[in-house]
Length: 127
Image (cartoon, rainbow, N blue to C red):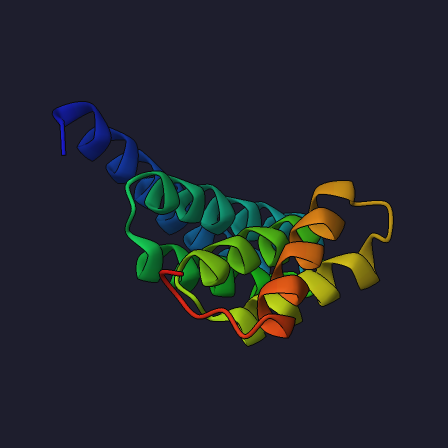
């Protein structure tokens, strides 16, 4: 991992910590702060995905979803990571939820089609 990647991760983590502190001071019911924190977790999840730290990415996407259960991008992202890890059932669940929130999300529909095909064909990870 290069120095730039470490700075990027540190910046994302710092942003999350600041948003958590801000949320604690204004109260957990503050919609804007909760959304901002959810997006920060999603951003860090994407960073981990790019660094091929898939389990850390899943943790961050799950945090984003816990904060904003209607955040379709986080469901989509987590679904893709689960697919890459061969967790087809979890991937299907995430992509289904994404499409339930936003039926017009074309990329999620395409990804779900692939997941369903892999499940139907009995494919397993690495095949």
